[in-house]
Image (cartoon, rainbow over all chains, first blue to last red):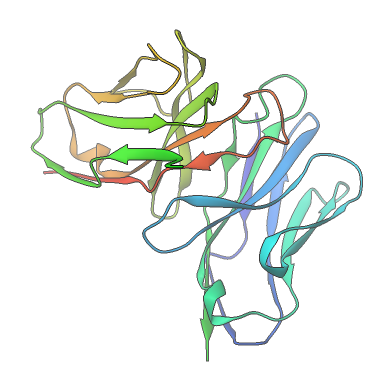
Length: 116
Length: 115
């Protein structure tokens, strides 16, 4: 079984500053990794995903994440945030070997607040 | 293009009442699922379906039933509501259960309160 730990429940950042949201996972098999974003009163939207290949993955809205297999991490980064990035961010993992790729296990979420 | 549509948006139930949360998608997706979102716990999978007529349990299935008679619809039934089922419920669908490059599409959620 997989599990995901998001190391920060809340991250306050000033506008135009860089940000990193941390995610660690646990799994006995190879995984797919995802970051989803949830804006207030909405469902989740896919930001980016790692399936295979290059460990640096670029997503929408200027976000990127790096898959580090040895540290079992998939941290999300953005070099300069905007007020509109205020949202909750979820890291998720799925089993790429034995089960469906869409049976996601989510982390607890990180609330990113951008201050002017 | 409506995507994933959930109804109702809000619902208040008394303990012991039953209700059905509706989910419909118009993208011809074979995979559909239900999650519940609770503060500090992220999203947890309740039930899922890999195609019409096929359903399976997720991480937290107790107290919930599902069926999938058509590709488009995947209702979630609460037979006897309990306060522990107070949560925000999300329906999500995908083109394929097995393909990692097929993203999940989420509805906007149903906020359920059980008193």
